[in-house]
Image 1 (cartoon, rainbow, N blue to C red):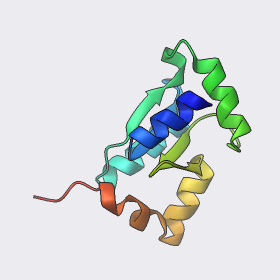
Image 2: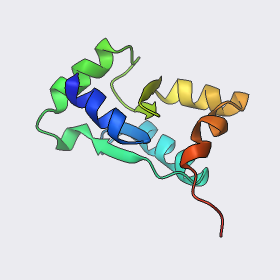
Image 3: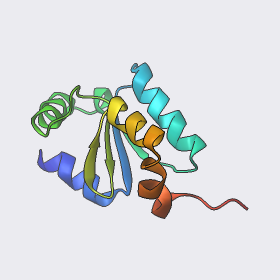
Image 4: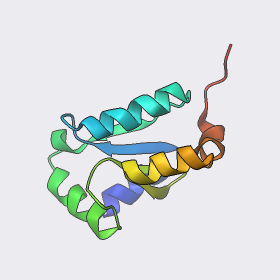
Length: 102
């Protein structure tokens, strides 16, 4: 769990992902469309991936991936991110991390 918390605190927006996960990809595309560039940590490419997966489940993720952290806080998985977006609550959370339109 220490590695999860360290990565989350060092990155404004962090997505724990698996390279073969279509829901992870969907969340990444949503964030790109909202002009944020999250750090994506592919746990299937990390030797400690199984431990990270277990830690995310212990932290309350409904599934191990995607697990989205914003500002060091666990937001949740796809359902939570989409619910926040549909309710209009996601963009205010992302605002500090959005790239400006030039």
